[in-house]
Length: 277
Ligand code: ATP
Ligand code: MG
Image 1 (cartoon, protein in one colour):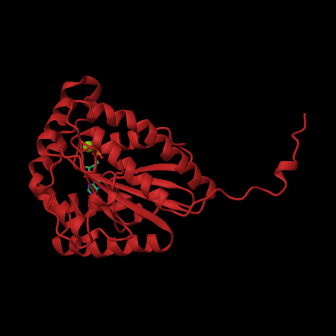
Image 2 (image 1 turned 135 degrees about the vertical axis):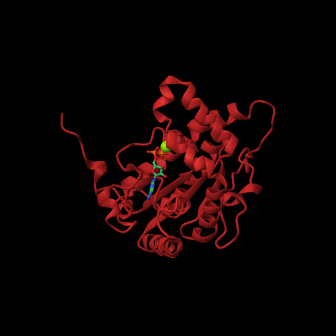
């Protein structure tokens, strides 16, 4: 079955209504609803992991392409779990995860792209952004950290910044993990109930939860205004973790397959070489 990642792509400039996209849905997955979908997806994941592993090796060996994967979601939206499952088995050399937390004093003393630009991928590298410069038009907007006039201008900066990266040879994929408010409640409750998950619970996460609708509106604007041909957003329904892992794997794999990659030519005369005893 071919999984058409295009079905999840946000069209440039097209309005997005997140309330019309069911976070439990499984677009492009051949959903049989026979109680075995989860098992089938979980059985498929190791195959996808292997394909990604080979593609990453090729990217690294060739040393020409750069891949940036941006992941955004509400709290407990599954950013960490996605990175863990999708990139399982990939050689950590050549893959970096950059997590963007509340900015430090030093970061705040610079423009908002300063801390981000430092982490973009080099030749042969994959970098995953766990949160990103999009926080500067999401939490910063909803929590009114800067005035409206200032964050509104940022959409244009961001589009231009990403276009510059793309023009200079970086392939960009942006993923929005779409969970429901009910699903977030369950996951936050789980962090309270399980001692080994307590460390993940932050009372501060309840603030954004209480402003859920404002965040959805902010995400809709991001998806509408910053999805471009060279830096597309993919909206991944993410209540079902098994679907999310398959969908994100497919997006990353198919994007890498679309690049013109080959192993560097071997040195001349390798077939004549005898390894000395
Ligand atoms: P988890 O989902 O596991 O809790 P996390 O990504 O939420 O991981 P945390 O350290 O809990 O990581 O939270 C990071 C916090 O930093 C988030 O609340 C996020 O909104 C905030 N943040 C990130 N960038 C900015 C920014 N530019 N301005 C203000 N807050 C920011
Ligand atoms: Mg958190």
